[in-house]
Each structure stands twice: as structure tokens, then as C-alpha cells.
Length: 438
Image 1 (cartoon, rainbow, N blue to C red):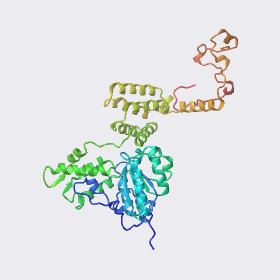
Image 2 (cartoon, rainbow, N blue to C red):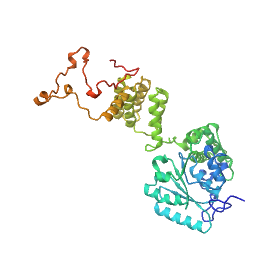
Image 3 (cartoon, rainbow, N blue to C red):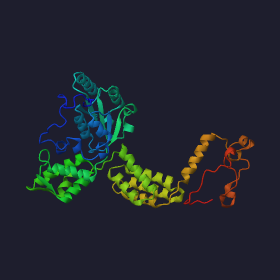
């Protein structure tokens, strides 16, 4: 006997939901027409939809939990949601968090309850860009997910840890989609070129170099690749038949690679983290690469300059005190010059810091001192170090027996400068590359 489906009758999709594999008109965008119809046709993401994976098994059993699909644009989040709905025979209702509100959610929930009550199966509620829902909107979904009124599939390009309420996050499973690799994009492009029913049906061909350029410029985004392919074919077709797409046609269609970078999102933090760690790790090649990723994607050059100043003091430190002057000069010059020429002082400072010896003795010294402050509180300043500003202070011993450093050879005086309770404590331990010696 077949296992009962969470979504009701698994043999056919409910009539009121509309078919997932609906036939699109020839005028529909190529990327829409070429959506895969089954999980077997889905390209990429084998780590979550390959044979034997939890999601593939759940789909085969027509029963899976509410989930969040987190991945970059064009990685297949919407397509995967629709395929899961098709595999289970569930009603599929899609919303965009950009335009939908609580009223839309309430209407869909009411319809879902009515459909289940009428024996028409369960409903998959797909919310695209769910990270754009505010807290109140996410809270409105929560009880219905918890009760099973709908099965939620949320799609997001942002880290759910930061953008989705903890309560909703705890009731969903997160699946992470990766950017598609060159082989995946190539397979999708080739399928579109050869599909006579939904694609270009052999009506156009790509020169090998044009194919390579299209794959490279797509940057792991299947939608971008297909949109550009469709436009490149139109450009090439204007020259007549046979239609053979040249590299220049691809360049015209793509204009310029749109680097995936959100100055307020995960990509920002990931790229700047890679930049910082490459400079800290004394890798000039990686350092300048990540710098280019930042600047070419439109990052504020002053943000980069501030990070360089931090690197100069935190990671180069006393191993090369001149590094701070270099970073400060880069900050001033980048501000005075502006982009694109601001690239010059920033890249020179980046390479200088990457190649400089490293020492974090300043950070370690401060951290140890701060911990001591936390542990011991506001210990009294030794009397001989106190500011003797009045006669009364002097009578009380303020400043008494203070030894003026410049009266001693080398400016080094053997006197207690720490509070009595810490007089034997050491905080600064020179790094192997530290320049100052004592």
C-alpha cells in the first residue's frame, strides 16, 4: 500500500493551484521556458538534491518540512521550490516579499485551510526574497507553519541567521545553494540551444569562444546566462542566417559582468574578510585580487582605506611602524583623488602591508591590560605619578619622589608606573619582528 502523502492526492496537482509545468508562450523569456520539469533535469546543487540526499528522499516520499533556500541569484531557488511542489502534488502559491503584505498572507492561509478541508491537499507557500519581510510579517507566517496550515519554502540571497526571525528559523530547515559551476552553466546553455520544444531548437549556434565567454560572464547565474544567450542570438540574427553567435555578440548582450556584491549583505562581509585575512597572511597576490573585487563591485574606497589603517596598526604594528604612515597617506590620497585613480594609493598600501613583517604585540598587550582592568577595577594611581596641581595635593604627597625620565640616560628610569597591586605585572611581550627594543 502506498504511503499517504502529506499533501493529499499525489497523482495530480489541485486544479485551483495551476500546474507547475505550465506551458509558456514562445514569447516568454528563454530562462522561464527552460525551467526543468523534474528533479532529474535540475542542474547543479547535487549536495542537496542528488540521489540519497535528505531533500531528494523527502520529495520521493511526498513529505518534507518547511524550509529556507539560501543561495545567490540564479542558483535555482525558485525552480527547486516549484519542482518540490510538483513532486508532492501540492498546491503551489508564490509570493514576492517585495510586494506582498500581511493581508496577502491571510488570504492565502484561508485558501489553504479551505483547500485542505475540501480534500484538495496541502499547500506549499513559496515566499521569494523572504529576508525582505519585516518582523511583523514573518511573525504572521509563524503560527501557520507551526500548525501545518501551509508548508513554507522561503528563498533568500541573504544569510537567514541575520535576516529571518529566530522563531521562524527554528521551525524551518535551511538548505544552502551554491553558485553554479562553469560545467553546470555550460550544460544549461547547451540544453537551451538544442531544445526544439522550449529552447532555441538548433536555430542558433555558439562559437566556442563565445560559449566560454558567456559561461565566464554569467558568474554562476543560470538566469543571467540564458537571458544573455537569448539577446546574443537576437543580435547575431540581425546579420542573417545561419545564426552563429560570436564573442562580440555575447559581450554586447552582457555589457559588463555584474559582480555579485551587496554592500549591506553577506557578500560584503565575506569579501572584506578575505581581503583582511590575505593581507594579514602576507599574500600579495590574493590581497590585490580581493581589493579588485571590492573596488570593481563599487565598494566605497574610504571603507577600504579605513580597513587598511586598521590592518597597519593591528597586524603589522611594531614590526613596521611606518605602515601606519603608509595607510594614512593612502587614506588621504584616495579621498583627495577619488575613483578611479584612488585605486593607485589603495593598491600600493595593500601591497606594502601584505609584504610587511607582522606583529600583533600591541593587540596582545592591550587585551591583557584590558583584562586586568576588568579583574581589578579602578586601582589607585601611585602617589608619585599623580598630578600635583595644588599645594594641598603636594602636601598629601602627590608627585613626591617622581623621577623625571629625561634626567636619566636614554630616558629610561627604574621606577614603579603601575598600581601597587600590579607592580610586577607584564603586559607587553615583544613580537619577533618588533622594531622597538627595551
